[in-house]
Image (tube, rainbow, N blue to C red):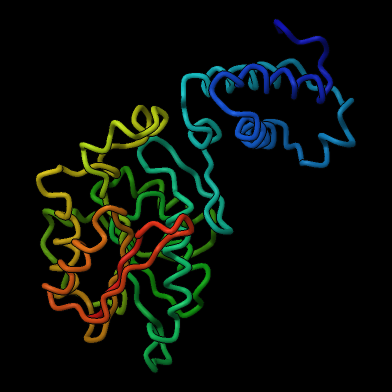
Amino acid sequence: MKGLKNNTLGVVWEWFIELISPGFNPMEARAVGRLIFEHYLNTSTADFFINRDIRINESDIVLLHNAAMQLNKSIPVQYITGQAFFRDLVLEVNTDVLIPRNETEELVQWILDDEAILKNGKTGKISFWDIGTGSGAIAISLAKELNYAQVTASDFSEKILETARKNAMLNNVNIDFFVHDILKTPLLEKQFDCIVSNPPYVRESEKAAMMSNVLDYEPHHALFVSDDDPLVFYRSLAETSKKCLVDGGWLYTEINEALGKETASLFEKHGFSQVEINRDIHEKERFVRGRL
């Protein structure tokens, strides 16, 4: 392979980092490189220190080269490996679903921290509905981490749900999945203790500030809303919650950092109480919850 002095792990590693260096700073390059090497070679961090002289076969070097070329086209590493990490989960991802974000892990944590108020004295199962489940990250986390959770999850296409169902199976949880478009499908004849959603919330006008690896490869239907009505999904969530939450039930959502007060106000106008905005690790207004 051009530019490669020999096929030892240490040399192949430095060669790979050099290949992808135009698109990443040094720290990012090494983080992405570890994901690629772990995926294709099953290496550990320790291998880079104690096994640098092991030989890498030619077919694996070709795979690494192809991965580097994809990275140089700004294809997200998660779509190259087909895997994303979310909390303690390993999830399969593809271009039908959004790559789960760290911020969404914080949304799940907020729900877990609110375990007592969600139970509200109940001793049986607590029912959750994850609207717009995508890869299933939120739904699977709740089912995995809360023994008493009875989780339902939906999205607008069967193709998306194929990925979510596979992830539920891979992570050994039982979730009731069904096709549902919150903007079009009639409301369910069912009630839940908690509804959670990470809907599209990035305004079209905000595209200019986004990276090409997001714009060119991640599904726009999961990201963007019109500037004319950026809260369209939150309005539908509020209306759906009024019909599908039990008395005293909770709605948790991830939001656009620039629209926290507007989102909270919308929920209050729809009859929610105890409406609260929560910040993410970067101190941005990222989540809103409310109770009916």
